[in-house]
Length: 122
Image: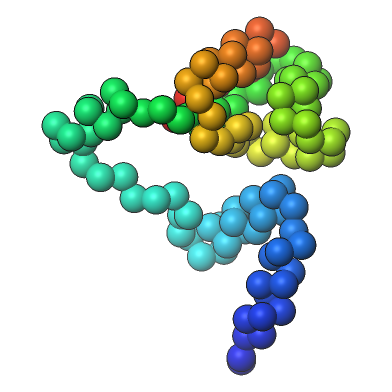
């Protein structure tokens, strides 16, 4: 069976982030693999890299009891529509924002934690 690579690439170009996230999850489950990058063993250089880190990913780890409030905050933070924001919250753990400055990451973390969510900065 030959794959039509260009057709697949064209479909991926038109997909939303949530659709791509669902695709990755489906592939991981179907083939029992992970899309996460391998983590190198922590050594002396790892601590130095963390100390100079200037951008962070804000990960919604757990939603908590106030799911609707968390969805509203995700919408306010990201500018996503209701459906997409709900998809991010339902897909937790999921990144809310990626590659943001430390100050912005901490502000987002505070906003989400204020409505009961658990947030991790990576």
